[in-house]
Length: 157
Image 1: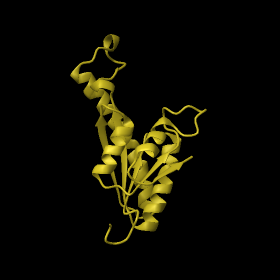
Image 2: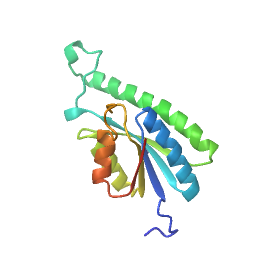
Image 3: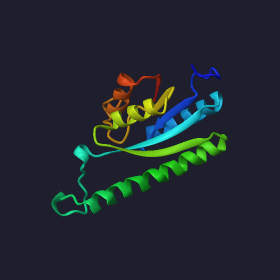
Image 4: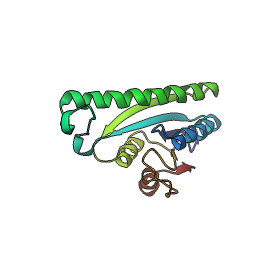
């Protein structure tokens, strides 16, 4: 049990740059402010079987440099989101840690593993991310998180 009795001492917000993901940030910052929580923003890079198709390679052939370029591009894109998130958090005087992690299993697995490792008390996630279909109320990542997480989840629509 947390010594300061704060049930939400560590809040995780997975981000992918989607509108719902960025909307969820506002909820995370407000709750972190209210509960004086540590806030962690996470972007998970996923590559099936450790490889990814890179548009710059001939016929999708993977080289270590093309894979590194792809990871660098994705990290740089995440840094733009983190910059916006940091501005929003700063306005509320909320401290936030941002991190990019890589997984070869699934985005859900990457988020859940990180959440358990960091002893997260609450995960706040957008209902649909970049891969979401308009027909779905809850996207596959949010659904997987809500099914398998060890802690409470807040899904933001």
